[in-house]
Image (cartoon, rainbow, N blue to C red; front, side, top):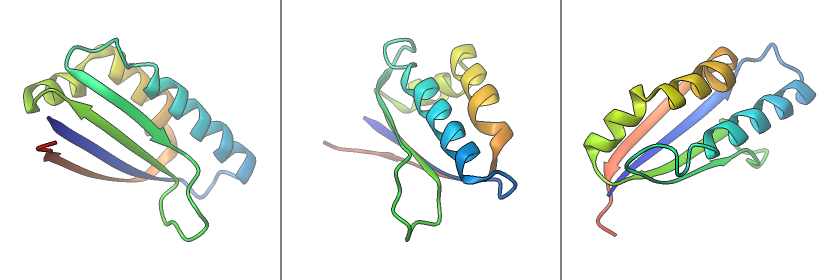
Length: 102
């Protein structure tokens, strides 16, 4: 299994209410991909970080293989969600992909 973890920082230009709206849209959109993309085992978005956090959202996803992760990254359903609900609003993205032996 391959884990795909992403942390996003939203652009500072958005106020708290707009950030809540953005985070909920990203969560709903990304989590709707479960069962829609071959090789995607699980996908969760955490939008409730504590005040000590320096990221606004976290994606925690699992894939059957590295090939499945690569296919997900270019899958039109994923690209649409990312281009609509995530990329326009983020200023920083950090990613860690790794093999999980669980």
